[in-house]
Length: 263
Length: 284
Image (cartoon, rainbow over all chains, first blue to last red; front, side, top):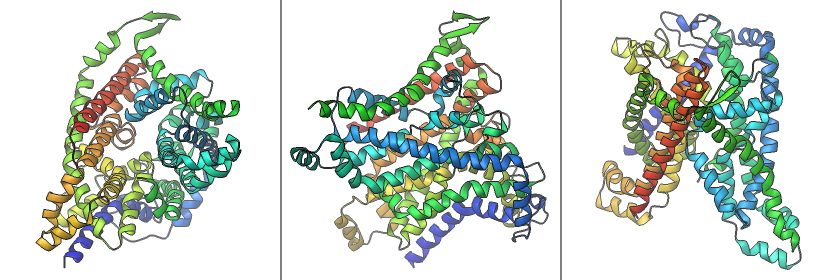
């Protein structure tokens, strides 16, 4: 009896957590006007492909989709390289200035992300990165959360194995390549996926620095066409689905592994 | 020996360079912008006048009030839910499935679900139809100041519940098994277990989650922007959204920078004070 009640409560909560997805899924199969149907239509419609076709007919959409994919891949690839190396250095070595840098990183993590929004835009502007592909990548390579996550894993590695390799005559580079990285490979892969998702979802600053359709990303495009009072809602829902689907796929692949890393 | 000395610096340098340029410089630039104003290509030192402008702005005071209200509603809504869900999920057989659904929204971009919510909560939308069927009334979610705040809170809770539940579940796994067995033998029900075992044990974790939620609420820009645009009657202006408005609707960058520095200071003070206060208490 108790089990049934607890499962019931969880199912209700999960239903409400999933409600927006169900809503978007339903909306994407209906033609425009479904939003305003009276009485409300709770079935799935038949204009899924019409919606997809009308979305792809917008040139801005294909451009922003390709941009989004490119930007996310480049950002996560360069990001995992830089963050991986830095977190290895922070976790395995003791060096001058490490404590100071760490405190600075923690401070900047613990204050609201957009507190320095105007300053970030000023810096991006000064470097001439407005409305350019580089502007969508370079400022977002560093992700403090992922850095701390990886650092905590490098921190827990026993130091003796590194010393053992050094005694055997391995150089620092060899130690890193043959011991440090293999030990933490699975975490690095998950971290790369997290970076990908973070870049894929990046919205506010890209919206503020892109004025040209050629450098639109998917979030910027979607926020441009989303308006409940406009009539072509099916298109918006399809775009939202395309925005969320890769994340759901990645998350299904990682599932349990992600839960282990987030300690 | 030389290689060993320089290697850590060598591999950390690219990170530090990017970190300095795109994280530390923006803070300095924000600070600079708030005390120096460029007028007719002259740079004027204006001191704290911009801060005074912000602090004496009725809209800023209102946004502080809004943030407090929104955060209070959030606490009332999130924490009971958090405790219930994490204690139920822990004992559930399909633990991973439920966690999967609850965690998923945390990975969806903030802007995407803010847009989903805007469609879901329209006056003639699906949610109002469901409410109509059950309670025979309609709620003007995005047109009523109180309910607009509630919708913002729902969006905030929806996005962060999964992360927090996971944090709590992983933390609760460290409770000694004997405690639970003993409670079972003594015939404690779920509520008693919640009250006497889970809550005392998870106090520190819950405090951390409280802190993160507070910082998130103060700094939330994207949710008000995409969901309510600060309205109705400026009821969903958070402090973060106030800053955004000053910069990009009114073009007043110095004032926005001053607001940004204030947000930075508020966040830092909250973190330091609460961390100090609660690291003294030894929970277990």
